[in-house]
Amino acid sequence: MTATLFPAESDAFANLSDNPRMNDPTRLATAVVAHVQNAALAMQNELRSALAARWEQVDMHSSSVAASSVLTASAAINLGTITNAPDAVDYSGLHPGIIRVRSGGTLSGGFRLASGGLFIGAAGLSYRAVFAPKTSVANSTLFLGLHNGTASTGEPTTGCYLAVTPGGTATFKCASAGVRTSAGTTATLVAGVWVTVDISWVTASSARCVIRNDGGAVVLDQTVSSNVPSSSSLLISAAWSGFNSAVNSDIAVLDSIAWGAARPAHCAFPS
Image (tube, rainbow, N blue to C red):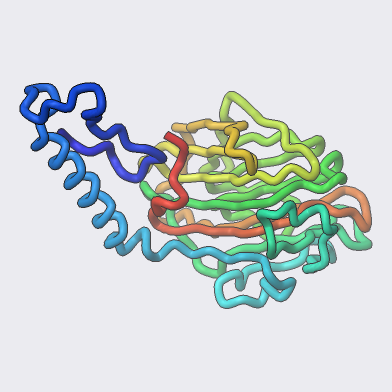
């Protein structure tokens, strides 16, 4: 019996409870042992994976995160700001270290947090962001994922990313040299509701985006199979950026950004 492909949220092991006879052809003990061995081997291989072990994660415990050793491409958008003094309600028990992103005193202000290193699109390349929009979601725009967007209000021209328009409509998009493909189904992000956004290149030519809330409910699961960048000439960064058309407005609270060449088991997509 072959083990379920790891990682997965659960594995359907052979069950002897309804037939305890170990020599029954349909419930051979050797099959159970083989299944456990295969599952254990799959787990070992996952832990040994050099790509999965290089998963990078930044928890937002300080507003100086923009100067960290990995988010070196971070910058304000039109004089926007970040602060590690969010509202008490934002912590929500599950998010002990977070920052608040604000628009500042200039129209369309905000902030871009991004890795300094560049990547090319390839099977396995993955991203995760954990954040919650604030009440100004009605006027906020966000672009998060692996893309070439800069510290400006322009939409990325290359990458796989979630685009959130004013009002909270979230659309998964893939873009190559300015040509974009949008997933057919969208989700609506709600102010104050924490979400985890996962994006991965499933293959060199297809990418998947899943959005879950803190309760584990999936609110979006979409795959795009066109305009997925995979050329060595198309360089992208892991980024989260947001801006607001009003001044001095809260855009979002951000808990973490993570990325890597392969998605590790603890960040697996839902089965």
